[in-house]
Image 1 (cartoon, protein in one colour):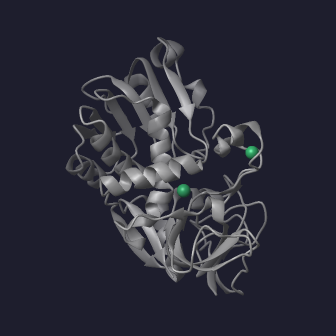
Image 2: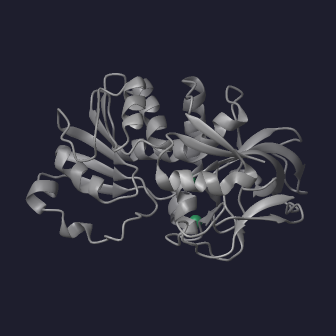
Amino acid sequence: MRAMIIERVVDVSKEEPLKPIDIPVPKPEENQVLIKISACGVCRTDLDEIEGRTPPAVYPVILGHQVIGEIVDSGEKAHNFKKGDRVGIGWIFKSCGVCEYCASGNENLCDFFVATGRDVNGGYAEYIVAYEDFVFKIPDSFSDIDAAPLLCAGSIGWRSIRLSGLKNGYTVGLYGFGASGHIVIQIIRYLYPDTRVFVFTRSEKEQELACELGASWAGRITDNPPVFLNVAIDTTPAWLPVVSALKSLRKGGRLIINAIRKESSDRDVFHYIQYEEHLWLEKEIKSVANVSRRDIAEFLQIASKISIKPEITTYHLLEANAAILDIKSGKKPGAKVLIP
Ligand SMILES: [Zn+2]
Ligand SMILES: [Zn+2]
């Protein structure tokens, strides 16, 4: 089968990170299924892996953790699916299943969390194997291409909303409006109809898209919104939005940081956070780590009810480097999906 691999940390401004390769189709273990891939989303986390902010455990590895395809084979003890079922795989490839985090449904925090397309081969390929308990049926209302970004951007977006404590009628700020942000606004508009959404992004195209999708207001990252925010969700790769968002929060407001790693080298952001201006009056900061099966399963159901339509650009599998560069430049709005 054809696949796109990375072999080491690469500076994408200097060279193309992904290499095409021909390797044998993997064989499912007894409780795994083999999936013929029809679409795979490209995520900002893939760029984080390439540039070494969350590096793979071993090289070479096939990236990709928003995988849609069809079951073509099952291991001896795998009985959940039959040939031809349309399924998806997200960032959670497996967890230990017995620790206190797994037992309480917080398997995203498991010490033995295995990430698809980082710790094991992912979906920049024609086939993939996965544990059947970590594979999801995809609602019929989505095409393969539309379904792919739901598995990461959408599911982690839903986790961000859950952790934010959002209630109907709140004011919400979305910092960054890429693949996750533009799905998050659609969930909020549906589940919390009296909530006003304020979108902060440097891209004018994304500001326009935000207003089309129901934002009450859209502006730049450092702009002051017309009202203070109960909740802010940051999906950017930078630190500046964290500082700006804290400033715009109401008393007791909560900021959710939905980014596996920040790209900017300035890890010293707390130097810039002034206690009185940004944190005083019971404001909170909370990060989102990984994703649980519950997040993916719930979000797929919500998405099918409100027929979320992600804004998508498609690329052939062998054009994966172009998709990565488009994520890096931030010039094309919406989600990116590879087709083998
Ligand atoms: Zn992702
Ligand atoms: Zn565990």
